[in-house]
Image (cartoon, rainbow, N blue to C red; front, side, top):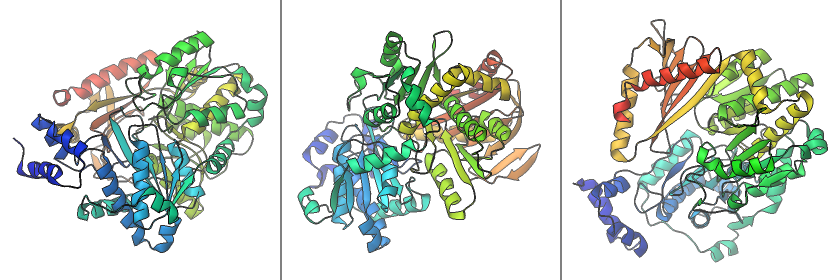
Length: 577
């Protein structure tokens, strides 16, 4: 039976004249009380990447009314910063998802009603270009309508601040405070009125050209690309998203003209009709690209997600087999390529710094140490990498070299403050060409060389979806069990320390130590050989993620340790998954 609070919320949506008849019909058609409960038991909240959820009617769903309420609250935060901030305005972009274009326009019209200038892209654009555009336009903020790599039933609202990074926690808290005081019926103006008042500007090509120019500046061997890029055969899929135009452009303009784009997945499609999930981490997403790669005898396969901030990579090895590289492996390869190239040309700055998320591979630590470059770890979410870049710029201490997170996100340079698959595609292609021409090796062989030099690390992420109110409670119970776990070994590996990031404490050798790290909801186990296991509830999805980084003497040893570690680890919580 529905609680009184949920029933009241549900009835308000049915009775209010503000909500349209289609929304009300959708709600009346719900016969399962659990479904009604899931839609109204809470409000969607900001996570590491903004607000994201399933499309539909209700307070716990993404819909046009939530977009308006959220935007109005965001607009009030901007107005609190004064008239100058309102004039600087907000840049708005959208991807190919259901209702993305409509949500983007509604965002612009609500901001205009608040007296805030809105710069709306005229068509699909990527998340990294939105990040760049905020900086390029000197805007106070930016909004990207996307649910990244989630299934077609999802959409989302990512918010960026004036430095081009995702919204800092203090500003996010202020928006949520405003939302608690804000009703659903918020003001907006017509598109015609917003244009006439000079509060809506449609933008496009000029920003595109400047963005591509800045991406091109991050390449290390552009002469080699122009001279020999055509010798590298590449198959690319945008997975029906926003990446095609700019990935094709950066590659072909820089010499990688032997490029084949998967035709069935080339055009935007909100239904993502050729894949189960438009996620380059999913094997299903590669089916068509692999078929064409074999036909075309391609050496390299690239895939971008719908908003083109994540890049997936497959490489043909010396046996002719296509190897799907993980985000960690691509991150290590790019880090090595960038650092080693700079070092050979005596261009590696003395104060250079590399950044990565705390759940990304430990192999990078070994590489960074060998290269003499400090590696700074940050919480999950690329905004924390952007935050560190800003600190370097403001303090004048440190030069940002490269940042990545294991979930297929990479950035070189400071033109944007979010992960960029357009840049990633260009850098991976360039690295593949460079090692092919200078060492006669493919990327898989280069990776094996790194394992030989720094140790064999095998990384794997396990994501468990636990939806609704019950799922949220089970995730909380899992974290409590893991916090109380006191085993000394997992997978026959000795546990060197345990970390509770939320409390900022580490237990090591029987001592409790304070950690110099932001307080985030992660539980960690670190092994004495450098590997780890970490558990983290997602901030934007009904999921809990488990990250395994296992060190072995060779691949077989690492695989055996990984399987045993997973078995031992999940034995405590498998009844809740």
